[in-house]
Length: 325
Ligand SMILES: [Zn+2]
Image 1 (cartoon, rainbow, N blue to C red):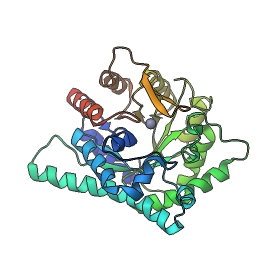
Image 2 (tube, protein in one colour):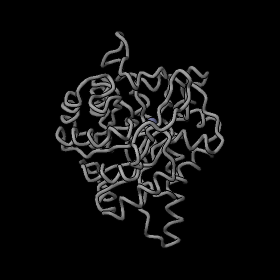
Image 3 (cartoon, helix red, strand yellow):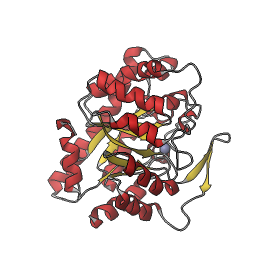
Image 4 (cartoon, protein in one colour):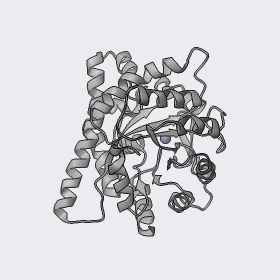
């Protein structure tokens, strides 16, 4: 890892070989009363309810998260423009997503230092960058089907300005999330080089079958691309069902030497047509927490939760993983 990766390495070492990522963001915003029924999804709160965003960050810090993921997953410049905002306003909102997380981290850390509580580490802030499919908001982040008109250069152009604005806002890491195909992984790796990004990045894929990335392409093809990049420090899986994670880690472990990150969803199933969550369909009697311990043993270093996981999930996995190590 490059020199700027030092803070992450230190954090992992201090925790005995693990870093806990926070949990579901939109889930928790809704629990606090935010209305996120909007094509911008949780990013709409950057406009309407920034105080709730900060509150969610604080709740995850209290629960023991070592890495806060910002509220910018579905925040894109074209998305803001289509809401009638100016380019400048859109860029300010992207900056704000990083600023809110940094402020939450700093104020929580001051509190911890004053209290002398040594159960916490100073958290890092990862700027979230959702896939192109997340911007389209048509479910293609889970199919990888971007249509015939999209190519490498178009994907780079789509991601470029947001990446620049987020990096300039001063996060500790970049978190590319729910990447569904090889083309976008390649576009991101090339973009990190072209923009000469100096902070560490993770690229996490979605997987619908627990064997392949969502497009149906092999993980090997995707990892062959990312292994060549020095700018991608961490690879992994997010927003897949927890039942698939152990096998995916074992598969990825054979394909790369990079650190592995996993933050699956709760295992509940999203019914896209009815736009609601169906009951828990996986995991049997095994809880998310018990599974998380296995994921660590199988070789994942960064572990957290995605959709429908809560501060309660993060609190148990943080206690379990840090006590074990
Ligand atoms: Zn998710």
